[in-house]
Length: 87
Image 1 (cartoon, one colour):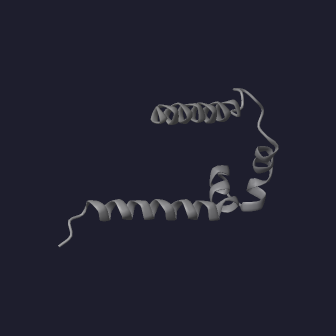
Image 2 (image 1 turned 90 degrees about the vertical axis):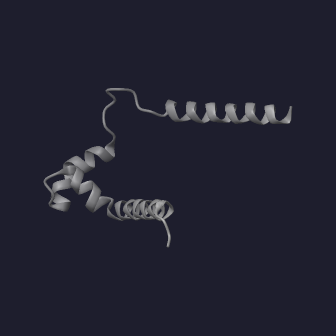
């Protein structure tokens, strides 16, 4: 009985989380936010990059990108170490 109650509560929490996440998605065709306009209008002047995606990834969010690369490298190294045979 207690196990069933825990499963039901977990399902309710999961469904509430999914509903909250999906309800925050912008409708299709909604105009971009002010931050998007700022990057589009000032990206090339501030960074010198002709590609706006490159400007955002490497200039505006450089430390975030470095952190993501570090996490990915650590995960790949860990998986490699798990699946190699030790002598």
